[in-house]
Image: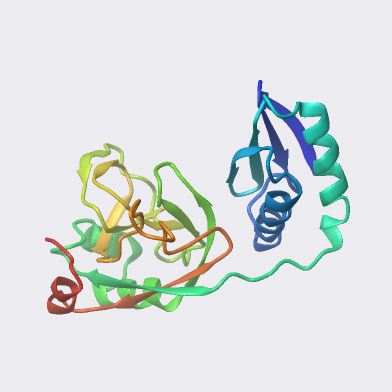
Length: 226
C-alpha cells in the first residue's frame, strides 16, 4: 500500500501495483470498512476506486500526519486479511434493439446473433469495482471478451437513465440522463441512485451484479420508461 497527499485535506491510498483484480478490489473494500471505524469523527468522505481509496478528512479536527499514522496502524496487516464478499444483486434488463440502439452493431462486430450477446452478458456475475463518474454509476467487470466493445468514437449527447452499456471489458447502468460514449444494449428499470431512499444505491463496491433479461411489458410494469 502506498499513501500520497491528494490535497490540503485528503490522502490517497494505492493498493497492489495499480492494476484491477478481484483481490485488489477486495482490499480496497476492506480498507474502506476498517477506516470508517478508525477515523470516525475525522472523516468527511471516502471514495473507493479500482485500486485506490481517497480519504478526505476534517482539517479542523486533525492533520495528514495523524490520519496517515492511523491508516498505517489500521491497515498494517491488510495484505494477509480475508476480505468479506459483497452480496449478489440482481438487476432486471430489457435487452432489445428498441432499448439498446448499439446492440445490433455490437453483435455484428462480434460475429454473434443478438440473442447470443444477450445470453453472454446476462450469464456473467460482475463485480462492482468502483462508483463514479456520477452518483450511482457502478463500474462492473469484467465483460466476456467476446462482447467487449470500444467506446463510441462520438459520444451521445443524451443517454437515458437506466441504459445498460458496455465499454471495453466494463459494463454499467447509467443512473441518470447524461452524455456518454458507451455501447447501449438495453434498459434497466431499477433506480441506481435515489437520494430519498436508504440506502441511496442498490450496490456498493465489492458487491456482485447479475443481469436478468425481462420482456418489454415487464420493464414497463417495473417502472421503466421508453
